[in-house]
Length: 474
Image (cartoon, rainbow, N blue to C red):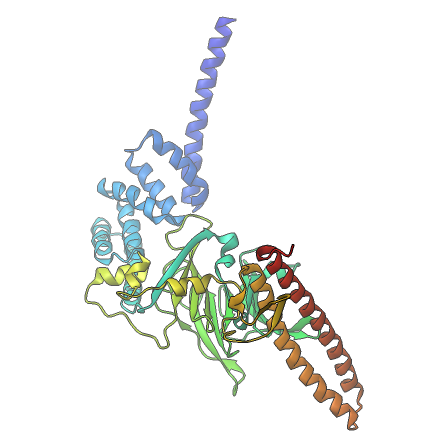
């Protein structure tokens, strides 16, 4: 029995060693096929046992780099470069370029060039990397002087929770929540402040995604239109946002000469030609070699947001809050290091103006669905006997305040709709008794009644919430 135990123990040990060797070979195979996410955990396991293996550091460094973890990749690629592995020079140079450390990048490119001076294929690869580094350096030199006052890192699946738009600026939600037929994704849909127009993206991996729009048709959305070129181009277009003028469109694209991943662009609708102007790529720090998307500017709050996964762990994203410039102002500095830090957003405090307190703006950015222009005596809202509120700031319960703010916004829509309904009734009374006008009046009457009931319900809910939270009526 003891001999059998020893035999099976040895057999298991041999089997484990064989499996270990096979696993490493699989990792090398996947690496050569560009399947870096699959090879990475196997190389990490092997590295624990052989941390000084130059080739293993090279494979691990490249796998980390290709899966987006540049910070960890640098350590392993630097080790491999010290051991004179030529391919490590090339990757390390590109990594430094993406971190805006251009002088260090050129040192590594020079090493790669000397190691491959007779290899035409390798020199062609180097030329592409140098061109890309030059493109990034020119972009860094055009960094915009923008004050970034806050940042929030959170899972990409819930990144929309960081965008707190005022009602006049519209609303954002996942495309798959609005269209149940579309697969779940991180793509977003924008609805304007009036609630009568939406912008969104759809497509697939083969054809890429394009931007579309729809209009409100009585009680549903329809009349889908694909936005024309030059907005929709090759690759993916997504994450739209439209300013309150209804003309200025921000969106993200992996095409349009992107610096890498999604970049942010702005264009404007031309009413005279029924077309869009050629999109302009936003400056750094809004754009980077990583994924940058969903630029939103809330004019009522005087606040903007954009998202980026630069230097973030997988499936995480950072949403930056900034103060929009009235006109583009470029950063002026003779120090390349300072330009690089501002372009990269190494620290948001670097962008702050000295002796300026941004607390009030940060608080405003975090407020949800509050109509900021409601000041002084805007309304008479009875809470209970002897207590009447006249402004939104009177509310002690933030939940009740938000509910009434929503009701007040709807009340404005209801009033505008009532005015339009009165005009149509007058037209009908004066002899225009067409079937189209009659149908329009009936539909509008239904919408007015529905809005009225919802406003009444929200006001009751706001009153009850304020009483429950802050008053004792015993």
